[in-house]
Length: 416
Image (cartoon, rainbow, N blue to C red; front, side, top):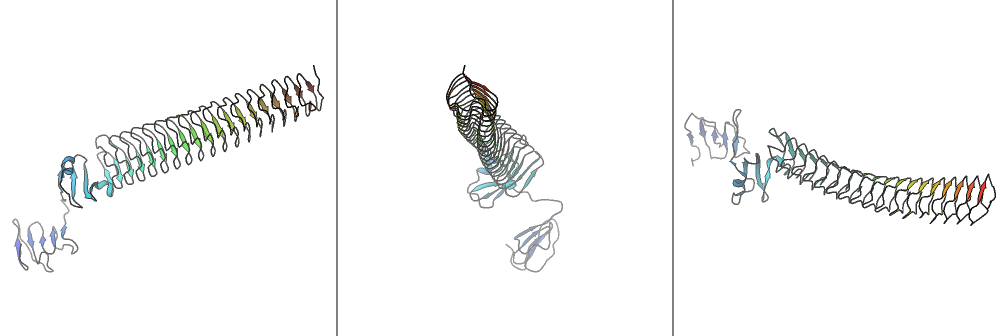
């Protein structure tokens, strides 16, 4: 080491001395005063730097090595910097682990047209195959190797993706477990979090489709909508908790808060309105439109309910049509048609009955092949078969009976 106040030439050029206790290496000479600062390419190194490099034609070349060589370094020091030739990225050692330089700040890889911003974002990406990816956030697209055209925004979005293509994950842990699934869109915290190989799903909202693994072509909009779906496909859920418990059901449509909430493996059902088909589990091909219509239905199939509380209490009845508020409200029978507010409201086990008009066949609980057409037609009959009432308030003077016919407003019964 040179003593203070000495200067020494470096082979290849001259030198000049400077004050303020500085070493200077300008490519041709070195000058020293107390060895406090070193400058290469500059005669005025920054006083806050132990080494100041300056050049307009050359750069700094750090050690280059394979991944295996990097990992074999014994007890690497904090801040140790190397360039990994296999990963084609800078790495530095921090807190007992190697961290990619792209992940820590930002990187644009011209060789594969990918962008990574965030600690360990696109950490495993392959230059040869994993192209056109965008990762913004810590661990976003962390394990991606060959997947292409993916967008991951937020912490651990698309974290496990390896070969999946054309996916969009926006929100912490969105599409977290996806490995090979393609063309999925997840927006919201944990949306489609468990998806592994399901394709063409859309989940928008916190926990939407969060447990989906292999289900395909599902659309889920709203917090916890389709949140428990595993393998069900071609379902549409819009609204908080819509189709929330569905696991393997397919081709269902639930629109509204809690619509088709308990459906597990039923298929082909349509529920539009708050809590429509709420209790449905495994029934098929029901249509419910209106607040809480078919609310209690569990296994009844091929029913149509339109209107608030229509077919509300139906559990197992099949092939019923209820149009109007509270029509067929208490129904458990099969193949009834009720059109009008509260028509056939009290029917329980009756079947093959037809009621058209407000409160028509209102009190009927059991019986079959009864017909009531007109407001309050045969509204007091509770049980009976083959009764026909056509006209407002007609045949309203009997509670039980069979084979009665009355036609006209207020007409009395006619027994045959």
